[in-house]
Image 1 (spheres, rainbow, N blue to C red):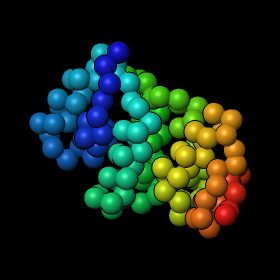
Image 2: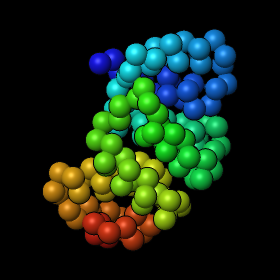
Image 3: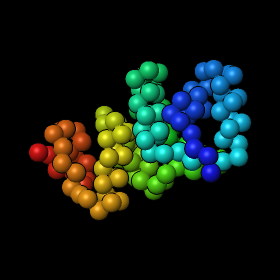
Image 4: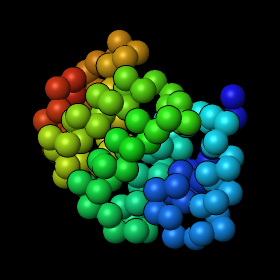
Length: 126
């Protein structure tokens, strides 16, 4: 299966360049794999560059999770991170991903100096 880069995900989500959106849609039409890293980068771009709200980012991730042509790496991890993100949107989506990746790998608690992140189940404030 093919894989997609962050910028392809961003085009699919923002639809801000019609030529690139068309190319991205054609590329994923036959199915494409999305790494957790590309997903994390895409959510950062949505927040930092496009000034999207937590609710808009959550909706974008949900769209990618349910997209019929995309296969997300560790979709169970992404879904868990999305649930955590929705309950604590002051956190970055990538923070929520860190906890869920550690949880799946059996490596909890996740140590952190971040007060907000330390409120998530599976973390320990240092």
